[in-house]
Picture (cartoon, rainbow, N blue to C red):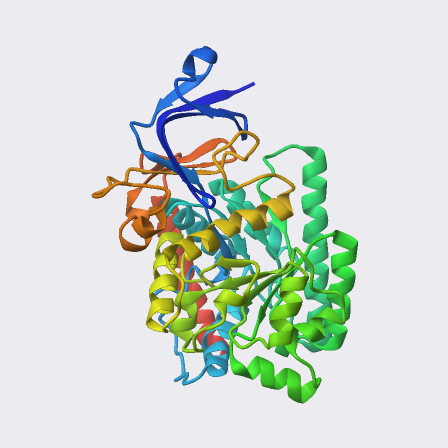
Length: 444
């Protein structure tokens, strides 16, 4: 038995919004077992960490990310002019993912994991692609998650964009193989249960009906849910109407691919029927404000219509404090009616996604919930209340205030330091990145 007490904390929840001061948070192994005032005397055997009033909140979750993009920052490869979304995919991202190998993927994932934790993220839901390194790639991502101590989910982007039927089959097989690897690891109980699986697909316009049929079978045999891009650009919609005569999610639903574990990224141009279907099936829409702006795909004006809305970054880092700010300010700029509390709830919904997939409770500072926590030393210039915590994040609090991060009851980042030296990892990543950029140029 291992008991830890975070003493004299300011316990903060985004949804339902709550701020409580002078709280002791009692953690046994990986779970919160009690909260209240002056609890230390009840647990004389406990290790006590004084919080000095710091904010302790359920960890932020990035609900859609691409850890394969970690070595793209400042990229020095010959990228042709890309005036639209499809050319951006072809000239940059689809060349980058084909250049990935075992080494570059591992370092990309390590860097992304470190930066996620340092910015206050306790979990990331990843969506992976490396067409020339399919078999075993998800295990390599898992290795990086476990090395750093980040909770996460990942899957392989099933697609036919490079190798047709052969690539479709290999992608689905990697998703199934990895899900079974997770099942075996859980049964063995030899390491913390930090990583889970989705069944991944790139987007409807790069997956044939044969691919959707394979994905449907993968969901059935693994018990996992689908993670897919949809309607990120108008092209996805027009392609579906031209090729199949159907709306995007209605097409997926014909293969039983939409349920309560479904995660749809972007969704800017989903139809009324698609939105109703996703809501009826209790699936999730993940909004990626910064990425949408960067790719110039437009704005999702229908965020208020979704039953389950979460926030992701789509590979633009994992700073979810920043993502909330972008989501809110872009929404206001577009004339939207929502206030910061709506986006705070969307950020909190990342923990709901974890709850559905890890069969545990996340997202509250209460007994029975997982001890995945972000600790910040944000000094408030105005009173901090349940009614205005979202406003404090939108207009002030950020990743620079993150002091410590706990995942699964373990301090993986404490007093702004990791438990191991990160500089050699970053130094090696710089060398690996340059080699990957050269491979991109060789691909033409």
